[in-house]
Length: 294
Image (cartoon, rainbow, N blue to C red; front, side, top):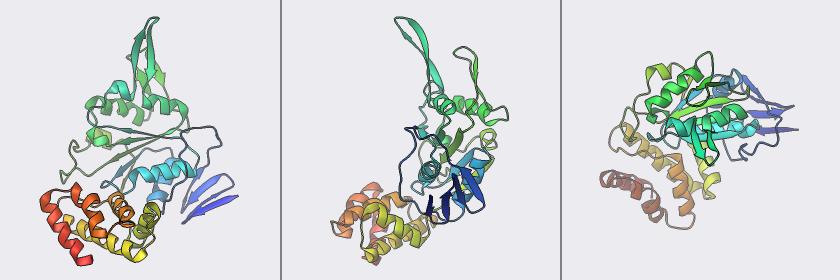
């Protein structure tokens, strides 16, 4: 039995895309394996990610919000039957939550694993979201895991050394910090950055692919309407590059707009799904762009 999606194939227990291949996990009882979702590969991002996964190398994904960083990892986990876990580092996430902590009850103290140790021992894939918002303590904790010795020492518990299951894979994602549009983020520490052998810059989807994704995810079947919406999104992104606006226009926001526009007038839908999410200055510029297409 084989499954084909774009230039991806799953056949005889092997997932292949381009020059890369990953064995499909045979464990059918993992509750963290993601379900099927609509995903169209664009460019060679999945091929490079797959090569890193097959080589057991950590991957850093960098891109604007809504470009599909999380979705790409979730999609590969689904295609290869691997458990997928995600943790968002919001600047307040502590080492206790990430690695584990000692708890106490009437019987005494006991240790509770954090999501990192849980994923390592289960052999799941872990995506660390917003890694450039993490506390220094978490960054230092990751150093030993990303170094050649690949281990975590539970020094706060019993000194036990935890090494990852062979199926464990580590991913991290971050938004660009240069434009200061993402509060709480900062440049990634060079020592931590160097420990990610593969770093992939992700951009928005090509026009035709974004139209298909928007139609499928929103349920809006009016192709002409969705094409005009995607042109609006592209124009806003171009305005952002030229510093005429300071708000991006993600594919996620585009899908929300198209979903509402299936029942409401596009301009009316834009008021609730697009314009309400930006500052008044950007809203005026985006309204002018909308008027050009609607």
